[in-house]
Length: 303
Image (cartoon, rainbow, N blue to C red; front, side):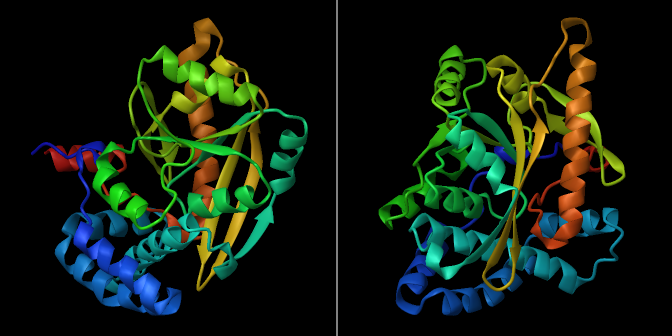
């Protein structure tokens, strides 16, 4: 049976369910809305075997023996971060305690009017990091694939959430797309890319949590083309309302020699996978890729 790629998965969440949660946020506030997540996530965990299986496999690769409760807490953390995104999109940063490690790197870039690529992952909440940077007037543009969340984004916009601000849709093979990113970098703005899902283009295999998985090379190729530095950025969620934001240098300049381009891309991808692994171990329940991520898992599903 052919495995569904994550790009082919349409919005699994119910638009009606999202509207109910938004109403709960307005009427009851964040604590009560968080309480509603417990039965919702319990239902989801019971009904979605794919998510349960992906969660179990991930924890086993971390060396953690998963139980049904481990999986439930993993899915609950994802739901909690998604809920917090609603408040962050509405500008309610006052509800959260945010600590920043390495944020001076971005401040220095901003003072020097230098742009950079911020390389993150589906780990914790990128919205929390963007909100923190917004408080300090650091412009961050998020590059991604948003078409499979069109209905949900529409509901969020009608609810007053600033969803599409500084969102840039991936356009594979488009020179206009590259020129737009170049313009942002030259203006001294940040371009954020999440590097743990394959959107389009070339991929390489890198060792991640003890097994090979496919990682996109797009961010590294883009950095080489734009001649800009790359920084790793992650915002880890710690209950009930704390986000720990991390930023660290990854590469001042990405070099891709013509004759050794493939080897260089694999090297960069492996470095990213190693750093991502370290941050996953800091907050194991913060990594949100609920599909067959590793090469051997995809082969098993195909069989």
